Length: 110
Image (cartoon, rainbow, N blue to C red):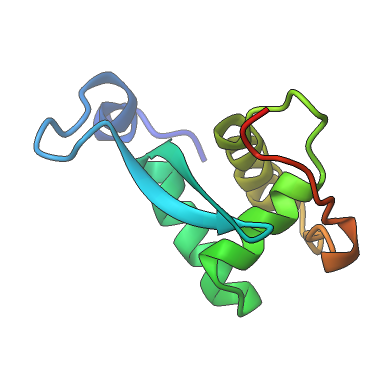
């Protein structure tokens, strides 16, 4: 069903200026402190994933980080993960989480 209601598009065209466009949070990844900066919509989506999967933010971010190439960007990888997770759900699939065995110990700040 297609809606002609402009309110459906308002979230993309007129962002709520009372909410910060993005927010930085500290995380611990593989035992090292770091930070990740995401837009509020991605933080909300990550919180929903954490609730559904019974994980902490540090656990999930560590798993995402463990799958990154050496020069990968953690914030970008988190956005791609969130998109993939909910896209899979929208297709009636079961999202796959990176496993703990995917963690790679390497310096976060290289």
